[in-house]
Figure 1 (cartoon, rainbow, N blue to C red):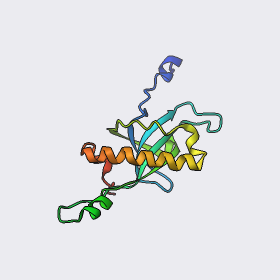
Figure 2: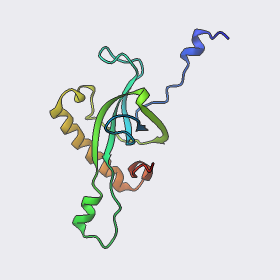
Figure 3: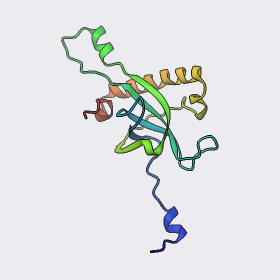
Figure 4: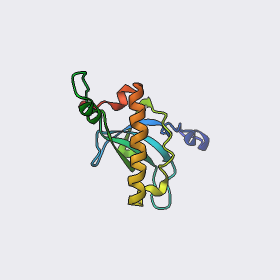
Length: 144
C-alpha cells in the first residue's frame, strides 16, 4: 500500500486552541487543561509537536447554602498552572472552552515573574467562567 504525499499530510489538526485536554504525565498528571497555543511542527528549542496549556491545579469544591460566605468563597476558588507540554503527554477530550488567555504568550514559561502574573490573570478568567455555571465538566475533579 502506497500513500501519496498529499494523503499523508492531510492529517486533521484537532489539537486547536480552546480544546480541553487531560495531562497524562508529570506533576499535573490527570489534571484538565485548555490549549492556549499549539505548535504542530515544533520550534527550534522544542523540535516536536507541543502546546502551551493553562490548567486547573486545584478544582473548586462543593458549596452548600449553610456554609458561611467566606467559606463558600474559599471553596469556589481554584488554582491554575501554565505549562508547555509535548503532544504525546496530552489526551484530547470532546470538550472545548472558549476563554481568551491573552496574557499567556510563548515567553511566559521562561520568565517566572511574567508566569506568576499570567497565572493570576488566568485564575480570574477561569473563576469568572466557573461562576457562569456553564462548562460544568471542566471544573470537576477527574474521578479515576
